[in-house]
Image (cartoon, rainbow, N blue to C red; front, side):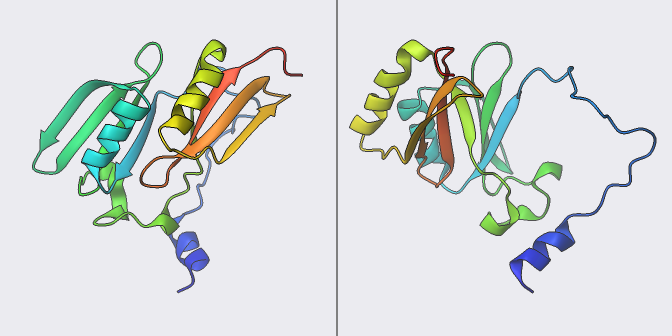
Length: 165
């Protein structure tokens, strides 16, 4: 079976009942969690703690494996690293190995202060990590740069900058 055919068979159409929203949902105020399933938890842990600088909120260990939760920003916003072997309702058919053909993750962005933008970019480069793209967005009024974590997830560091029009 071709990968696009396989992907289509995994997705089922949703039959909406009632009236669908025809305007933006103003009750959504941000992204509360980003969760990555990872092959090498120790390597990824070192990267997100020592390179990105995230603080561990909690670590859950049981027979399924380990999940590490990190604080990201204000409030309860967080990022989680799920050991690849972790099985639960949300891992669905992705066990036992992560199949890149079954994920739709393009990248994720972490907001950093504008005053830290250039120093963070330089710090990442000095660690030997390649900045694969750097850009500005006039419609989002921000600066951003991109790099990969050790397992190939694309990370964006993003800074709001009103001067960009």
